[in-house]
Length: 87
Image (cartoon, rainbow, N blue to C red; front, top):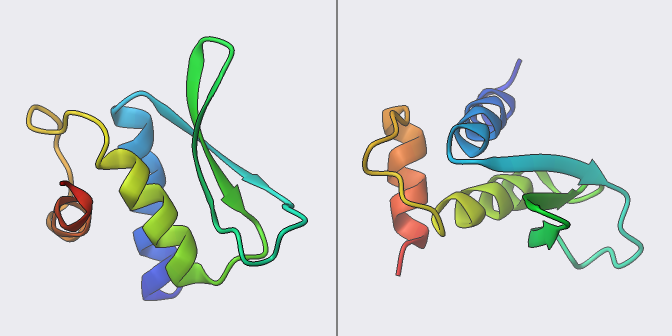
């Protein structure tokens, strides 16, 4: 497993820990990596299955950054990445 794959795995877990569901979907717009959306009563991060790994990482990290993470354990590399996306 590559470093990026391990990071994606940790980001997916962190997303679940803050109440986000991560879904990988085929998106017809190749330049669109995905994003956060509300589906019925759940917040979902839609990730373009065809996006490059670094864009998948950014999509999930930026979605997590919209959530309160102070009381949630995030691995140090995940917290550092998420904090970059906090405004």
